Length: 355
Image 1 (tube, rainbow, N blue to C red):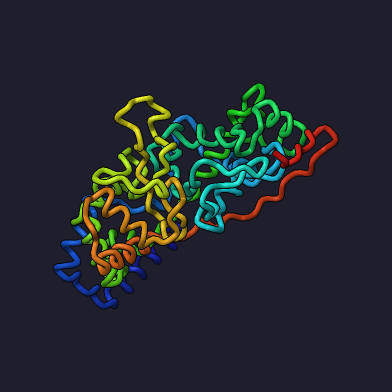
Image 2: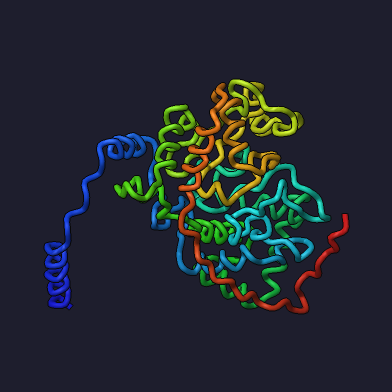
C-alpha cells in the first residue's frame, strides 16, 4: 500500500509538471472574489455536526425512510417530502402547502435543502433546529394532523421500524419514540446539501464559473446592500428583518394578518419581522416570500429593492441580480427512494382527508 501511494504521488507530481500553468485571475475578478469571500462562504461538501445528535449512517437511513413515510400523518397521505419535495428544489412550488382536510397552510414552504445551515427554522424562527422543526408539521392540524402517541403506535406496529430504531439509537430502553423520530429526520436532512454551485466555484477561485452578467449581478448584490441580510453560507437564514425596511409591500405580498415573528416573541417591534430567506437554489423554489404570492424571480428582486433598499432598481440591474441568483443552484442531493415496511394488523388505520 505504501509503495502504491508513493507511486501515485510521483505520478501526480509528474503530471503537474507537464500541465500548463493556470491562467492568472484578472484583477477585476480577483477584487470581486475577495469582496465576495468576505461576505459569503461555500456550501460545505461534508455533513455538518449537529449538537446533541450523532449523524450516523443508521440514523440517516432511518431518517430517509421517515422523511418519505406518509403514515406519520393522520391520513396516511402526507409526508415530509409532500411539502419539501426533493425533486423540486426541496419545497412544493405552491403558494402555500396543502395539508390534512385539503386545508391550505398559512405560509409558503421553505426549502429543506441546506436547511441545516440556518440559524433557526420556519419563517418566524420558532424552531431552534431541524429536530424541533420536524415535530411541528407532524402535529399541526393544518398539516399532518397527527400526535406523538399516534406516531409511536404506528412505528411500533411494524417490526422493521422497531429494528431500525433499535440500531440507530443503541442502548436506549425505548428507542421508538417521537423525539427519536425527529432526531432521525434531522440526521437525514443534514445530508441535503447542495455544494459546488457556480457561485461556490467562483468563491473557491474559478473566475470562469460565473458569466459576465452573473459577476455584474454579484457586484450589484453587494453594492446595493442586499448582502446586509443575505450573507453567510446560505445567503440568508441567519437573521431576522422587517419586511418593508423602507416601504412595506402591498397586502397582496405582505398579508396584514400575518405579523411574522411577533407571534413568537410578542414584541411590538417585531411585527412583520421574518427570517431572511436563504437564497441557495432560489431559482428552483418559486413562488417567493412567506406569502408565496410572487412567482417571478425578477419581480421578487424588484420588490426587495423598493421595500428593503428604498430603491427602484433599473431593469438591467434586476436582470443582472437575477442572473447572479441563478448561480446559487448547487448539485442537488441524490436520494434513493426508500422501500418502507408494510403495515400490519396493529397499524392504526388512516383517517379520511375530508375536513
